[in-house]
Length: 120
Image 1 (cartoon, rainbow, N blue to C red):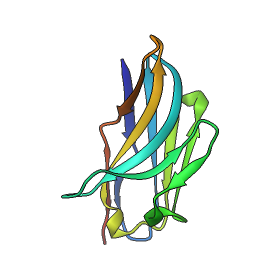
Image 2 (image 1 turned 90 degrees about the vertical axis):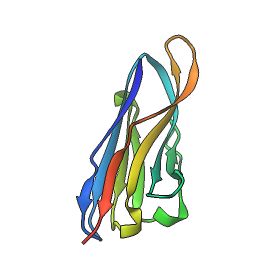
Image 3 (image 1 turned 180 degrees about the vertical axis):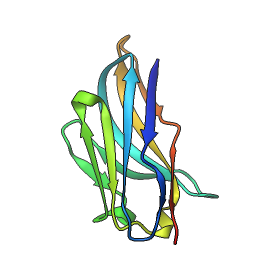
Image 4 (image 1 turned 45 degrees about the vertical axis):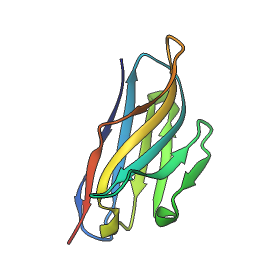
C-alpha cells in the first residue's frame, strides 16, 4: 500500500556526481522525517543524511560538504545530490521515511535500494 522507489544510481568515476531520487506513493496521509542510508559490502547499514518536513538537515561526517539532501513535500519525494564522489561512497543507497498512512498508522518504510559504484 505504501512504496518507496529509489532511482538515479549508477557507475561514476571518482570526483563525479549523481543525484538520487526516492518517490513515496500509496495510502499516505503525512510524511515526517525522511532519510538516506547506505550499506557497503560486508558492512552495516549506516545513516547518511536526514531531513525534516521543514527542511532541517543532518549529515554523516563523511559526506558533509559533498552531499545535499532535499525534499519536495508536494511530490512526496526526497533527493540526495552527491558531489565529489569517492570510492568509499560505493554502496547500496536506501531511502527511508517515517509517515502516517491514511488509516492513521505511523510506521517506517524502506525503499529497495539503488546501487552507487564509484570507480575508475
